[in-house]
Amino acid sequence: MVQFDEKLYFYFLGIVPIIIILFILQQFWKRSKQREFADLTLLKKLAPNKSSFKSVLKLVCFILGLSFLILALVNPKIGTKLETVKREGVDIVFAVDVSKSMLAEDIAPNRLEKAKRLVSEIINQLASDRIGIIAYAGQAYPQLPITTDYGAAKMFLQSMNTDMLSSQGTAINSAIDLATTYYNDSEQTNRVLFIISDGEDHSEGSTLSAVQEATQNGIQIFTIGVGKPKGAPIPIKRRGVVESLKRNAEGEVVITKLNEPVLAAIADEGNGAYINGANTEDAVEYIKETLNQMDKKEFEAKQFAEYKDQFQWFLGLGLLFLFLDIFLLDRKTQWLKKLNLFNERENE
Image 1 (tube, rainbow, N blue to C red):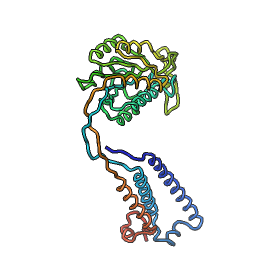
Image 2 (cartoon, helix red, strand yellow):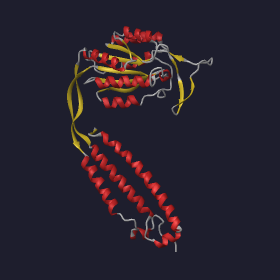
Image 3 (cartoon, one colour):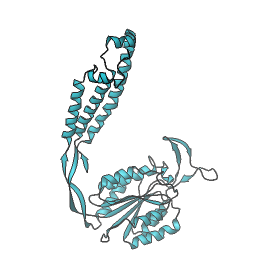
Image 4 (cartoon, rainbow, N blue to C red):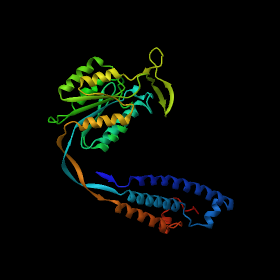
């Protein structure tokens, strides 16, 4: 397990491409000025020991030295001891709708990004609960099993998109059925499922039966609605630019609407509550209070307890490459000149 003390210093790595661009511009300028003075053949005779390769090598050493020094400032730490700790919490599964209707932009920037932000903000409010993530459209797909690793959860969450599942449509029942297999602790009394969706459901007939089965397994279902009841078209984009709008078989523009009654019915049948996700802060605060009122079950979790600084290795490598840059000369190295590895010796 790796941790970074000062992630802010990673931004300094943006200096590297600037240095490379400046170096390339300098080389073009230098060659232009040299041509004004004399042709290249004459210049090579005037300075036979001048190495064109060494300047590139010096740049590489300087960039590596600078990069390692920046990594030393970041101070990576490696976990060296894994221990078991006791924690108390609730098992929570997030089922996120990734169907094409979630691309509608009636809520900024679009429904899917709003859903991901809601889940991320909820995770930020958790203390020691275990979480899992499911993506669903025409079928459900396990994205992350039950875990206490919130960092991994956010990473998987950000990678979710509407192209990750080949089967389109919206089958909420599939998400609920898959969620029932997620809770691996038979003694956990509080099992919570959050369904984040715009409410479009192409399996209405079997959704409520799936909800009933879930409640029999002790799962409490909450639904979070994203979008607006008046609806919006579904943009079809290419490289971030809207090319057209999704149309039905008759050629009419499809308007997708937030279906609050469906989500409210699922939540009511699932002994939970429907939450409108339009206001992120209010929705997250309500969920936080609801989870805090639930009984917490004690469980064991493994985590890294001791971390050792690793900055010294990067500092040493950084100084080594900077010293190499300082002591490397622009003239040809004699033994390398004899090998002529870089075709620097003229044919006589």
